[in-house]
Length: 402
Image (cartoon, rainbow, N blue to C red; front, side, top):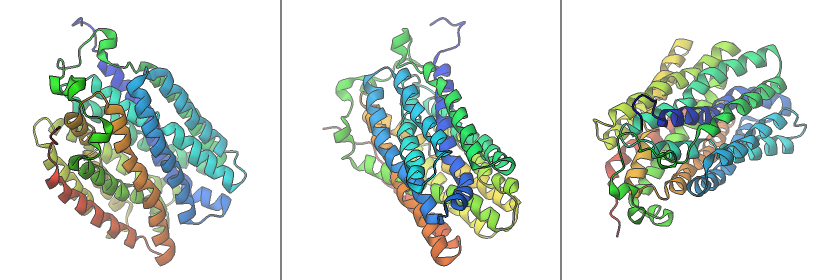
């Protein structure tokens, strides 16, 4: 590697950022679109949230599929053509004339394509970095919060000036443009006769014989504890991010002002990923996990006791910072525990925890709102699951391969 050239791994991070931005687009835009979808199709909170759950159920299958494909094939074309499904799904949603078409286009097609974004990007990025790995992954995953900062206000503005259909078409165009980041993704440093940043990985990480199979990895206590933490943390996050915008509207804020509520989560998330990624080189990762899950739980008390937009913003920044603090930690712990040979499929299976949370979280939040006419019960539920996740950090240990 010539010293006067920029290490190509940073272009990998750029490509991963663009792909993960699209994952964030699908995640954050739904909360803004939710009230308009309710009005157009005459659906309840729980019914509209179920569309998101269908997308995430398909996403669970898609993550495993694209994780396997990332382990076996060159990623550029696989990611690009997979992502085209999401762009097509968003575009066709604009022209959906029935509830069935709505569920298929937004639920099935976008969910299937979404698997091409996050998991392959993270798996490939990890292959390029030995040192500063958590920071590099955290930097790539800032695509999610930056997407929220851009997409939320943009979607709210387009909705205000035009309609739901135009908003969806614009989002599909953004998806198509950012999808070209797939062509920056090279399979590994070896493909370009380079070494990972910081030198070669330790033999136990790099050696295929010392890597775990996916079937063996998922049977370990450590994998299941991490998986349960992901499910619980995402339950809290998805309930909040799905209904925070709607809650702001109910508290009397206008459309554009209300969009600042979820956007503030994105802002906090941006810094949380970078700070946690940086600190993981100096602080035990289990301690980081305990701290951020605890902070995620305690931050919810802010929104429970605030009726001003400033309170919503303070909550969003604090909640987003803590939620994002565990994002770069999980993939690194999985790679350290189970090696890299099957990292794609292992992380793909692990990522299904997000889908489980999405299947149950938003519909549960919507049901509690419809049943009791208040957002408080859902928020208290979020506090409880985050506290459980925090104390699960005390059980994580590196598994021993027999």
